[in-house]
Length: 293
Ligand code: AMP
Image 1 (cartoon, helix red, strand yellow):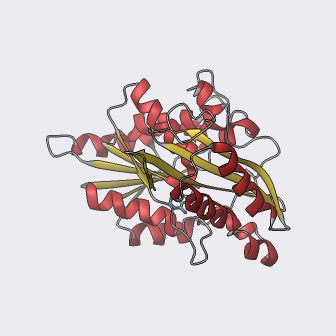
Image 2 (image 1 turned 45 degrees about the horizontal axis):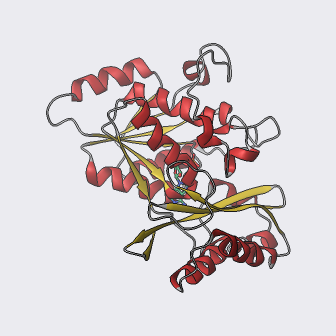
């Protein structure tokens, strides 16, 4: 595994790879790697000749009162994990390289518009603009054929999918199923913030989604009752403070009144103490029969 800081050096390496068999898979991350990131890298390894993983804690996707300064960082461990997962190039750009106008300063942004109005976007103004902007920079620098995102951050993955379609990036976006702890909690770099009690209650998000799945399988297609079940389940965990529990259309990311034939995302977010956790389930309807991912 080779480690690169300078995007021009990266670009020279990438240029040498271009040709009819060029097949580069990019896994963008903020580091503090866990088995969820590893799954993305393994999928990239399976499908690409060259796997590039980026590690960059992007300031523009953190709000002023969010955890940018205390976001977990452990480069030594990340290096080992990335090498184990078969990453060829570990790209760790400097802040000045990604934001030459100054930390988080940017004259031109990639604006996800209404896609950022709901779900996490409603309480994290500017977050998805920061995500779309940094991911488009990474796409320009790496020029991958495929890029890998986790379903865990469902709204993010769907916004990136729309971004490549609307801005004509010739990149296939692969959305990889959420990797979970044995009790159902979605792996997240932020799980280490949880106290012992919070950690015990945190799987309630997954249990709520599982309960929603069950009622949908039993024929409930209205969003209202599905959202009520999500809320009721999460209210059962004394340490959980619900932020949202919403059924939305997978393309527009707007709330819907019922499960649509096209794909839907059922998404939840809740605070446990100061730690904000999210999870989701994607639901389609084929010939009236629900399918889940
Ligand atoms: P992050 O480092 O948190 O920005 O995440 C980098 C990528 O890993 C994103 O595409 C995430 O959606 C993905 N990811 C994070 N947690 C998981 C998980 N539990 N399972 C699968 N992918 C994940």
